[in-house]
Amino acid sequence: MTCYETLFVVKPTLTEEETAAQIAKIKDVLAKVDAELLATDDMGMRRLAYPVDKNERGYYTVLYYKANGEAIAEIERNLKINEDVIKFLTVKYVKGKEVAQFDKLVASANTEKKEESASEEA
Image (cartoon, rainbow, N blue to C red; front, side, top):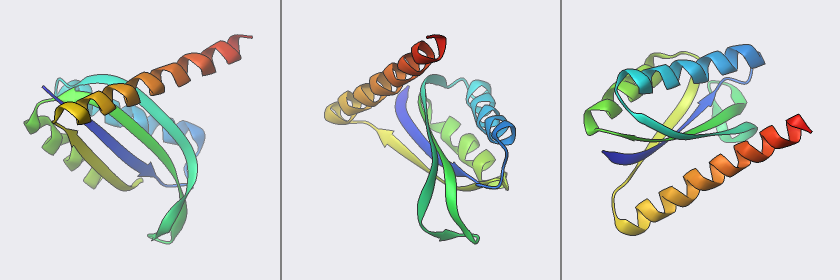
């Protein structure tokens, strides 16, 4: 299995529940294609570099996972047909240095999530 990172941007007009549902939908696709989800990084609402479909902002989410090559086609197909996804990008990590950087990104995403849950409990 190869390491992948998929960044996707959801329309800014969605409510928090609708945004969470869109993220869950993509996670379900990952589960269906037997991909191992390692971390999720919700980057939140950000300004786009250029307007896309008259949207100047979007909700950014990054998924870090390991999957087979055939799984990527199914994941990207689902992202393409989803009207609430403005744009997406999938990055493949192959070489040793790239995989090491991937592991750092996964670790930082997981520590951010732990810090957020600890601050919510306090």
